[in-house]
Amino acid sequence: MPNNFDVIIVGGGVVGLTIARRLSLSGRSVGLLEKGACGQEASWSGAGVLTPTNPHRQDSLHRFRMRGLGLYGDLCAEIREESGIDPEYEQCGELSLLLSEHEVSMAEPDARAVADQAMPDGKPVIEIIRPDALRDLAPWLMTDLFGARLVRTTAQVRNPRLMAALYGACEKARVVIH
Figure (cartoon, rainbow, N blue to C red):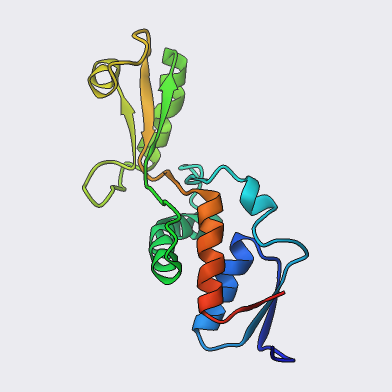
C-alpha cells in the first residue's frame, strides 16, 4: 500500500466511489477512506429512483442535474463492464395518475415547459395522457381517472447492485479503499 496518494477521498458512497474510480482511471493514485462498509449509509437506503428536476427550473443547477441524469446510463454500462455486476439501470419512465381535473390542470404546465424537448425516439419528455389513451395503455387501471402524467426521463437502478458494481470497478481501477 502506498504511503501517499495524489488524491484522498473521504466517504465510500455512490459519489465517493464514482469520483475515486474516475480519478484513478485518469492516472491518479487514489485512496478512499470509509468509516464503515462502502455504500451502507445514504447510498444504500435510497430508493434507486433517478428523477428529473422541476421542469420549470432552467437555472445552471437544473442543467447540471439533468446532464448527470442523462449520463447515468453510460456510467452504469461502464461499471457493469468493469466489474461484471449489472446495476440494473433502466430508463423506465414514471406514470403519475391524475385523479381530478384540478390535477390535470396542475400537470399540463409541466408538459408545456418541456414541449421543445424530446426523447431520442421523438416522443415528448413529459406527456399528459388522456383517459381513453390511458385505458388503452393500462386497461387494468381504475376507470374513473382523469388521465396521467408520463415523465419519460425517470430512471431507476438497484442500489445494492450499483454499490457492488462501483466497488468492484474501483478495485479494478486500483483505488485503495480503507
